[in-house]
Structure formats: structure tokens, C-alpha cells
Amino acid sequence: MTTIQTAKNETSRQLRRAWMGALVGLCLWQASSALALPIFARQTAHGCVACHAGGQFPELTPYGRMFKMTGYTFGERTIPIAAMGTVDITRTRNNIDSSGNPIVPKDGNVIFDAASVFLAGKITDHIGGFAQYTYVNYDHQDDQSRFVGRWGSDNTDIRYADRIITDGTDLVIGATLHNNPTVQDVFNTAPAWSYPYVSPPLSPVATPPATTLVEGGLAQQVVGMGAYAYWNKILYAEVSLYSTADGIWSFLSKGKAAGNVDHPQTYLRGSNPYWRVALTHEWGANNVMVGAFGLNADVYPNGPDAFPIFDQGVTRFRDLGFDAQYQYLLEPHTVSVQARYVRENIDDPNNLVFGDTTSANLNSLRLKASYIYNAKYGVSLSYFNISGTSDSVAYAGSATFSPATQGWMPEIFWMPWPYVRIGVQYTHFTKFFGATTNFDGNGRNARDNNTLFIYLWAVSW
Image (cartoon, rainbow, N blue to C red):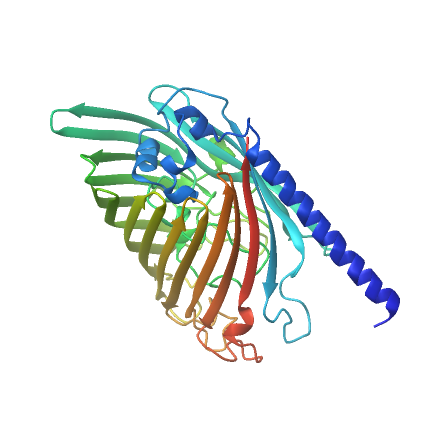
């Protein structure tokens, strides 16, 4: 390497460090500003730890769950606008494929990942909610390999709720309009709010390559309408119906459209039901939940041009999940444990997704435990395990055509201010696409996908 090239590399590294430092400083300054109060904290006059376990957003405390179930209406109306952003760096253990090309774009570079704008809070004594609109800085690459950014709809949840308290009865009833199955859920075992709360934005190998439909396959694609009830802080029950978010509901799937090859619209046949039940109990500093949920969805295929095909039938997904959560909340200590298992049965009579079978299943297990001290210093450990029916079309990237993937995800994080989190997360794969070694038939091993992810996540008002 020439002296000139070495100098250029060093200059580049210094510029990246300076840019990162400037972004960190800016985010910390914004978060510590006297005017930088979260919408809901400002509305309720409570700090972040009242709603979020150990201050770790988005994990909710019992108070946070009740605030959400009662339609985000506690407190007084206030300025309803907020913003959020992430800056991060990803490092893949082996970022070169069998052809010598990089797998993860921008690997090893500090990037501004995404920013969100929120409109949220209390509207009336019985109506409230939040709507999130997100800009992804490195959304996709054009035909000249240049990155293109994109604005689009993100999680949205609008509610009507009432709370009826009498002698011996505490009943919350409500209705919700939303655009992501389980975004309306109040527990952090639900896929929309489950761990990991932030992950590498550009890496195709940092997360399991196959997931069940309820674990994100319909996010920002659908309109959901549901009703729920919470009785005596013991029994929670909900029923929702989902259909395609098009026509008058297209604002819920903004950024996705039929014919958009980068972000095609997913079309459902008819109304597709979702249900949820959970038992909860609180004692002292402890609270626990055990529950179950299910989603039935009939999905039309999209053609190569990203337009839906309505005359070839649908693929039927039947997802059944079981989950549990435990929290210990007593300053300065916070402990939270979550577990979720989803069994998905897939009926594909016309081989729209699968090529070797018309009936398949996919199983997903996620376990997570975390400890936070003084709402500042935290550590988490997660385990994931995916298994299911092998298929040469659905899992063509596997030498054995298997979706089986498992691994561990440790993380440490620091919250210097209530609205800033700096974290170091590592994903270690013990199996990927059905094998520990040579999973793709080209010599790539599961551990080659191990990923170091360093992030700064800040919320500012």
C-alpha cells in the first residue's frame, strides 16, 4: 500500500470518527435539552421509567400497558409531535460471498440509518393514539447501484377506550385501528414490540432468513380493526380483522404499492382474523403474563412485476403462538424475561410459495432476558431457533433446502439520558439455513454471518 493511500485511509477514518462524534453530540444535546420531553411523559407528567421497564423503550411496565389500553389518554393534551433517529455501524465476520463480492453494503461504515416523525397523544378523554412516519436513508439501490432513501408509513395505532371501575370490578374496553398485527398488543412478547428492538438495517445475513407471517410479514401492509377488554387486571382478550390497506386505507401502507418492485403491496383475500388472550398478575415489584394468540391469513401471490395475481388462488397461513413474560421492577433494579413460540401451518395447494409440497410448517422460538441497573446500564441475552419443512423453492439459498437457523444474541447498552440509548449487540449463529458448515453449498459457514452491531438510538422533541 502506498504512503498516499495510507494517508487517505487514515483521513477517511478520522472523518468517520468526527462525523460519528458530531452525531452523538447532537443527539445527546437534543435529548438533554430542557424542551426535549417525550410526548407521553409530557402528557402524563411522569418520567420514562413510569411507562418503560428500567427506561428501556419500548418495554412497557404495568402502568405503561394500562396507559396504552386506555387509549393513550392519561393526563392532559400537549404538543403531539416527536422525532426519533438511529446512527449505527455493522461489522460482518465474513462479508465476502463465493464470487468475491461484498454481502453487506456499507459494512464497517458509520451510517445514519433512519429517522421517524410521530404524531401521538390524547385527542379526547376516550380517543388517542400514535402514528409513525419513517425515513429510511439506505432503503434500496437503483439500477446504477446508488442508494435511494424512502419515506413511508410505520407503526400506527388509533384507539377508543373506556375504563369502568365499580366495587370489585375494573374493566377496560376499547377499539383499535392499526396497520401491523400485534402492534396493538401491550406485551413485549408480541412480535411487533419484541426483541431485538433495533437491528442491522442493511444486512441480509444478520437475522434468521425465515420467519412466520405474524412476526412481521404483514407489517404496514394491512388495515386492522379490533375490539379488546381487560378485566380486573387479570384477563386480557382481543379480536381483530385484517384486510389489505389500499383505497381509503392506503395511508397506513404509504410507501408500498402494487407494481413497486422494491416495496410491493401484499394483498389479502377477504377479512383475516386475529385473536389474543392473556392472564396477568401483579404482586409487589413483580408482574407476570402467560398468553396465546393466533392469526389466519389468506395471501395472494405477487408476480415478477410486483402486481398481485388474483386468479391463481391464495396461500393460507395459520399461525398459533404461546408467550410469557415476567418483570421485576424495583429501583435501582429491573429484570425482564420474555418467551414466545409460534407454530405456523401453511397450505399452498397451487405451489405459490413452495415447490416440493402443498403443506408445510414453520416454527419460531425466541427467548430473552435483560437486567438494567439504575435505568442507565443494561445487559440482554436472547436465543432464537427456527425450524420447519424443507423446500427447494422457498429456501433455495440452503444447500439442504432447510430454514433451520439458531443462535444467540448478547447485548450491552447504556442510557446516559432517558431518551438516548447506545448499545453493542452481537449475533452469533450456531446454525444457518439448516447447517453449521457449508450451509449454501459454496463453503459459507453459519458463523461467517456473525454480526457486530453498534448503535445510537435517540428520541427528541
